[in-house]
Length: 121
Length: 110
Image (cartoon, rainbow over all chains, first blue to last red; front, side, top):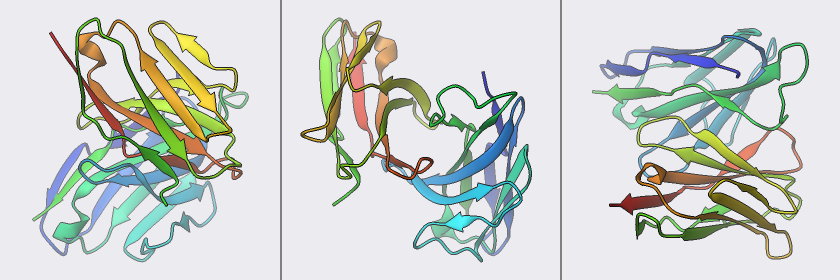
């Protein structure tokens, strides 16, 4: 099946530093990548949607200058949390939709990365 | 009103029991419905899609009630390994945007 590799799995950083999280589709072309954030005991909240080669579309309330998303290729998308603060500590998950030779079965089914747990001290 | 609402539980059931729970959605134009399973500190994984006619996959049965705008998940003969948080996922007219419920926690005890 489709695989999305996300790293780092865990990251601890000091307040004010920037953290980059990568998601790679290993065996398919990810035409659309979604970035979610999940706080403890809460649902996944969509932060932004990015299509390869286009600027990301951010959800209401998500600061695009703080959460920089790049989707420059069909196999790689990155999320950079700039000047991270303790309130940015969360579980960040990417998911992807895309193609091999044809649309992956179940056009609305997403393949998730394993998530990145960010702790900002 | 949240787009997708679930009873957070937890549902604590003995092995072998049947457990069922619902999820309501607010957008009547929603087209696709899913149940995902999420284990603690892990990514969600697709459990099953929910079809209009209802569908069954082994011990899991999903139903869709469009009139009342809810979907349900029933787990028969619960196993310890069924302990997890079950996320209700709905997508609306915009093909790609999914809305997640906060999850229903199920704990199966020996």
